[in-house]
Structure formats: structure tokens, C-alpha cells
Image (tube, one colour):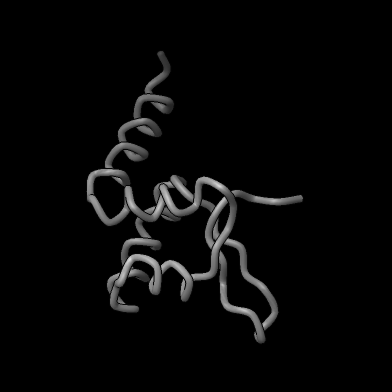
Length: 80
């Protein structure tokens, strides 16, 4: 197995190494949700949610799509 693939897998599993991030991924399994929806559903503080989403996106465990200014960023599966 190439070292790059091993590193990707290690990063991915590191992103899932917190119960809140697993809960976020569970919420996103059926499609993208706004950050506000995730915060409401999981009863998270905004700063805490932002940190966890940053880890998931940074480790490529969840994509992040940005919408026009009137719509907040959304996390979840990418759509064409």
C-alpha cells in the first residue's frame, strides 16, 4: 500500500476520533445540512461546531460547500 494512502487513512480516522465529529457525520449521511441546522440538532455551541467542522473538512472526511452570502455554508455530500 502506498504511503500516501496510509497517510490519508490515518488522517481520515483521526478526523473521526471525537464523538461530536461522529455525530456530525451521522447527521450528514443523507445529504448536506447548514451549520446552523447541525448546531441545533446536536445542541452545539457555534464555536465548537466550527472547530469540529474544520477538522472534518481539513482531513477530507466531509466536504464543505459555500453558498451565496444569503445562505450559510453547508456540510455534507458534494452535489454536481
